Length: 115
Length: 118
Image 1 (cartoon, rainbow over the protein chains, first blue to last red):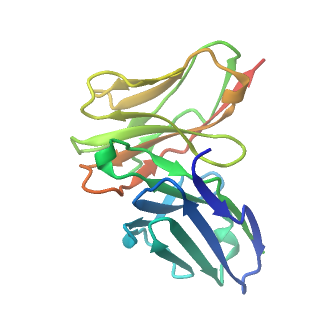
Image 2: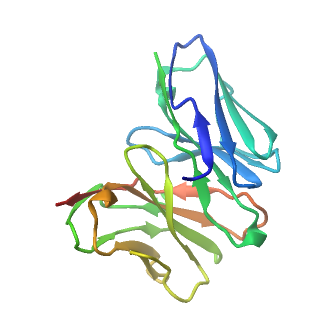
Image 3: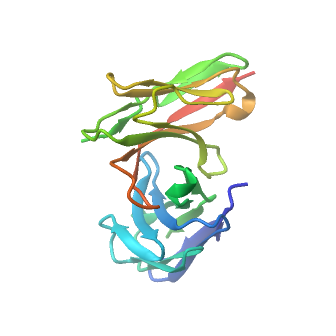
């Protein structure tokens, strides 16, 4: 049990739809991340939030819009997606360094299919 | 330039035997960290083991050990006494630079699919 939950687990949407992915971490971490995992490609970092502030936007198209209302919740708002956006979207969180923990904890992912 | 290279797209191992998964990295930073994650078919990434660039001893976590050869820039994962449940994708990842705050970027390799044969 990782303590990071993601909903929904599976999502099928048309290119004109608007949907949101939700991530919640129950670990008291300060930083949260969105990653994209496409078939046959390495995991790609999309966004990083530290204490609710966005610290990284890895050249992600504007049709992906993140939101981090607090250190425990992270959303990814989706609109006018393209079929090539179909992928597994993984959320992760990491701990305050003073605790001596270095790893990122991942959620189970949302499998997104854009039709 | 690719920073993390995993040259084995797929590997087989017999149950109860040991297996080594290769990982080489490229960085000009003196301070960095190396991670291995396991991804079963369910999708979630499970942290296995961490090695800091200044750690003098190889990291070990149960049946997992990291063969860290700094001069060769390699960080191979060794799984001893393989179990059927070890069948999964395995990813090597690197964090570059000095840790300044809680957040950091991880760069992942392309992964190795391990299948454990009974």
